[in-house]
Image (cartoon, rainbow, N blue to C red; front, side):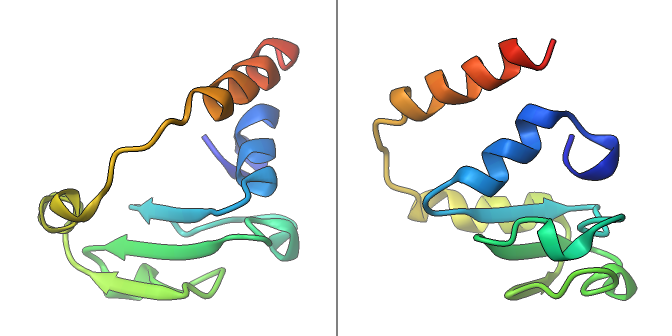
Length: 98
């Protein structure tokens, strides 16, 4: 979970990612210190409730839809990659957060 109610390691992952597209679904994308939330990334906010989009943090791309429909459309466009080194880094943050 991200944000002020989330874990330290998840917030570190969002803020340290070199290419971050935060796909937020069913989220108001932050509470608390909003200027620091995903400050290096681009926010794609998918929500079935249009009133929630851009409520607290402006999305770079706003999608008023249910997440299942959106992910079904996006999945064929995703290219496979080798993210093992990144997963190891996130795992290390997770371990240090315990």
